[in-house]
Amino acid sequence: MIDVPTRIGETQPYATQLFTLIGRSAAQVVRRPTAPHRAAAARRLRGQALWLLGGGIFLILALMFGFDATEIAMMPPRRSPELWPVAILTDFGKDEYVVIFLATVAIVIALAFPLRHGAARTRLLRFGVFIEYLFLAVLVPVAVTDLIKRAVGRGRPFVGGKAEPFNFLPFHNAEPISAFRRRMW
Image: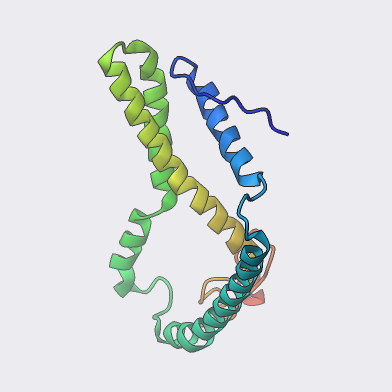
């Protein structure tokens, strides 16, 4: 059983408060349900999960065969001159830039925190918590998405030099590359 303190004191260090809160949340997630209709709720949850899984699989297959193949066939080849606005927009929204910026701001706040006192220190702490939240709100989905992408292994449409919507190489770190591209490298 997890030994979780019952009270979080504001005078405790930030790390202690954070780990206490994480421990309390974990203890609440793993505890036994207290609902009187536990069996019926579990049965309903299993049924809903199966419907959701089946619907998700159907939707993915329908989109891949009905939408992806059609749209990829209409796409211009990669690095076409008329795609320069799209390339700029793609580069602007890269998640690495956002994560690096937020990490830099968090480091600056951590370095400036001991130099502040009173109300300025409180405001800086609140802003730091906000930055930490944004950092994790970007980093966690990016990491999970990256893991899913590596597990599925779907390559870009023009990796093999042609519009191929079903280019898969699961559980590899690099995007699938055709034999033609390997010879070019």
